[in-house]
Image (cartoon, rainbow, N blue to C red; front, side):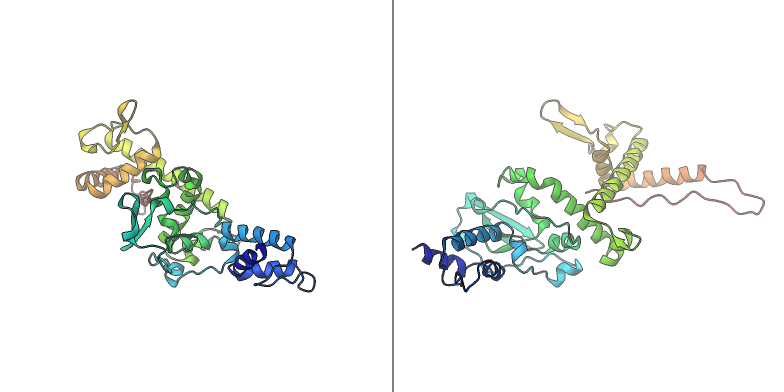
Length: 311
């Protein structure tokens, strides 16, 4: 019967949902319990709350964050019990992720859409959920937000339209989480992102980080242009500034962010380029040194900016 079905549905709902329903429907009038439903309005209310619970589980379920997530030391993959075994999945539909050495497997056809969530308040949620999360669960595994790109990017062919919906928001989370990791602690993060003792809001932090990235990209792109004399097809570029265009064939990168990213990568693995660039910087500093004053003191050029990771 509809009452029996409703009773089953009620008993499976999270406790916070039951409390909400109980408050809305006084027991003395309707008699709502976890085993009985006595009115059509109660059934409609329960269906509504069940929908809310399914769509926004974070608002109704207690959130569990491990100590590893709080400290940002390592990625943790919470798991209850896998819904199915690896052997039961058709190999052509099997998707395997490696997250910090832990192998996670699931059926590509059973991956849900990415949850519609906000991590804006409090901002600490961003780096906590980035490392350890139950917001998205696949085959019983809690997937850290940092790994969502390994599931939903178009190249993986899973929920092909999903990445377009979450890419910008995921990118903002990524930059905030990486900045928190770079700074080393919550206190250091909030020292940077506070005004008059008040923590900045999520959007303000995102905007400041975007401005930093733009400034950094402009500087490093200018450095690369100076080093290669504006010729990004030179042999000593190792071709890092070239990309394949489906319409034009091989093309040279144009955007400052792309040039800066490839330039920093080149400095990391090409020892010769890195040494030559260091020599150019040293020579430039010597040229700009001020002449000695009558006191015998010498004013040197400021230290070069520390490169920012744009990956």
